[in-house]
Length: 486
Image (tube, rainbow, N blue to C red; front, side):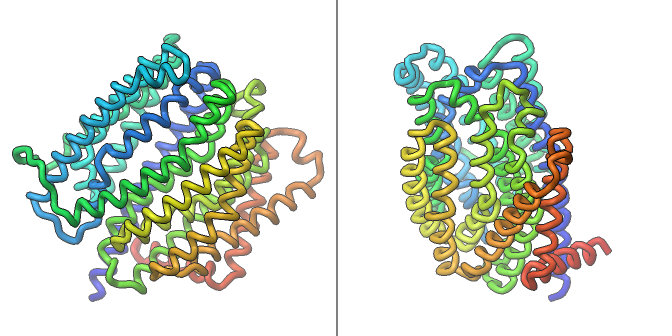
């Protein structure tokens, strides 16, 4: 029995290291993309493409009908079922692309801008390419081929950045923001099938009911969760205009988008691993909790530091003309303090086949978020960001903790303890920063950001070492890493 945990630990460690390396490169590329494109393009360019993005994202919810995760989560899956999933996903991808193309004139009429026709059609192309790449990527994930997945992530990110930057430099304006994702999707498709050992059989239309039910509930969650992630763009673009939306889009991309790019590959790592031990509840809980303590320790202090120095960050990266981004960035940063851990609760629902509960949570979360957006819109983009942040702490985190408690084996205390420690550490760090002599923080923007980072990480680590639960989790993770290295 001892060999299997050891092998599991080695796979997790190797997959985690490869994922971290690939994601670090990918985030660096995306971070560079945010900076480079902000200097080559104008706010209106970002606003135009951001106005279309929510519509394409909504249609994309039906891109593979949640079947990609079903392939990963199932304990056993046959060639017949894989063939069913592939053709169902391919047909869904073709249908969603056709829908986006058909909607293009209506989108242009809604915004009163004829440029939206071409932008919408161009933004729909990656949907079909993504659905065709879904099966080989799912199988690589199921078979724990994290190295190949990491390579694919890196080359697709670089391809998208180079395509967008070259187009922007050539003076193509907003079209560069359309060409970048299309290039990424094309490279991802070619890279996935290049290494795939699986090939589909003849087309079929049917699919097993249990797989379809799993995918339907997951798609339902993604559908209602869409409003929590995209309605802000639609409302700001319609009522505040493309310039204000451009500021909001840059703040979102600078902070929350990198967070998503940490959680998404980590999700790809953890779901196949946790699915394999879904019946071993104590082990499931231990691995989930330890992963969350480590994730929070790495991400939350950085978010707190960047939130504290939002003006300096924006000035260094974008220049003074983008300073209206700073208050939006700060409020999104406050919201971001709780997002790394809240996002991982989906692992609990998916790996234990509780996507129905996940769907119900998504309905509640979306309603509270939509209400917050509508209320905050009275104060522009910054008001939307502020309302989103406040509603997360008041209405969503407590309810999510109760749902996690009901599903188990992770308890509400487990989740809230991680959230609470790093919120407290952020508050202490912010207070300590403002007590520093003005000569230290006012001399240089870069020095101010560095001091904020050091202060946040130092206080967070100190609190982790004081609290027994976080200290034990930290020791367990480091011991596991050291043992697997040996």
